[in-house]
Image (cartoon, rainbow over all chains, first blue to last red; front, side):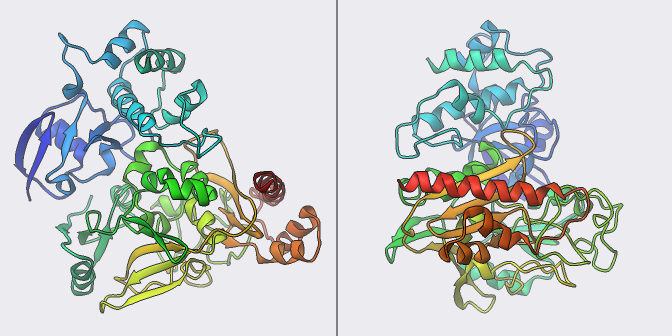
Length: 165
Length: 315
């Protein structure tokens, strides 16, 4: 199926098998291998990308269903010469060991801060009608969709807290 | 995944027409459950009708309550100011399910129609009457730690995994649908799901090809609200049991083939029973399969905690 998706600011058109997931489209069709295939079942978050500004699991989404959408992957957030502040913070805090979950962690964290700015609650939000504050417990809960099997969580939390300002 | 064809529906009417006209067709919205099951060869649709972009995502006042479009995402519902102010039990239930990434994609309609997480349903090398009718139930004498304790049958002891639906049942929500012939229907959400009986593969009272277009909440009942959920880790895990309280109404999750309205608890409380006595009334009918024996005690304690929390909420 002819599908046009704007990826990292550039409109890309391809003829896709409907079975192609958004993750396989990014990795195999566009050769953007930043988003990782961890579990391929929405359980680990390594494939997290932004679609129209929202974070989703690219593995549980069909590429043809994103015809007309704007997708940002880790390659679109920053470059080696001009890192995104979240990437800079991950480097500074050594917030990774093997690095496999890191692109998903960073994409997720960037979108998570937007959700907080929009006032979205989480299960850690005690008063659902009060303004949302990014406490350490809130930060951990909001990042619970991204698993790090090296368990670099303390550094990940520190990096995100710094980037959040 | 097996091959399938795909179309994006232009309207709800076109979607139900296409579903009625196409063999093996399924609706897809967020796809977070359906695509997972397709990858595992458990769901095998021949045609997908994408309904995610239909104009069915609005959350708007209706008759003193709230109408939530079937295509609203779980995140949108949980973040909605009306939901947070008037129906906190619904926001809490949604926020306790899945991950932010999943909630950003998953729809209200799809959440209601998600399939069980029973390990035998997921394992195509094992018998499962729900996945392969007539093949037997591997859970009866197998890994049944999270199996049902209420309303199960000898054919199936699977549970419904939704958090959201438990809160909606306690809130006495109704479901609006569009039938394959284009007729609009509305009925209580508590009548959407079936108990397994002899046909656990038939999970709802929907007509094949019927589309859930909205969930309608009546005005919130007087009294406090609370949602409590027990699970194996603090976040991003399916529940072992959950309890939703809305005023004098109570529903249990992950203990049956459907979200379970605990009418015996409600009646006993209304008659002056203590919370412990009241939940005992509901659970006196509980039957367990061995590894899930603990769920009876867990559910009772969770219900008492939720009732106390709702009382605090009302104060």
